[in-house]
Image (cartoon, rainbow, N blue to C red; front, side, top):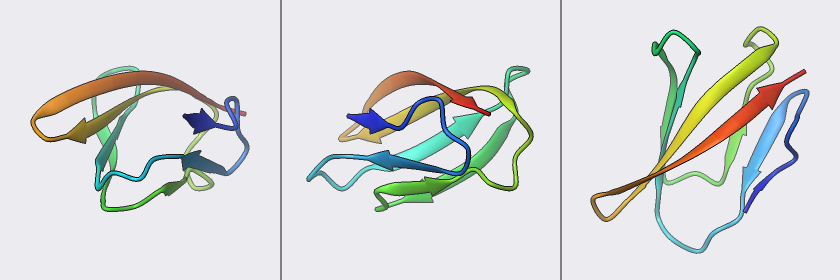
Length: 68
């Protein structure tokens, strides 16, 4: 579960797994990479839509995130 979406600052990823998170802007540039975290601080990013990839055990799960 990823919330709140849309967000102003912080995204919470609710999981018990040790995951890696990559966040890409709409032109495909990686803007954030975090490993073994459950929260992502988007406060320094401009408003817009982002693609979040959650990586676990060789699998990639994608989610769109909106920053207000």
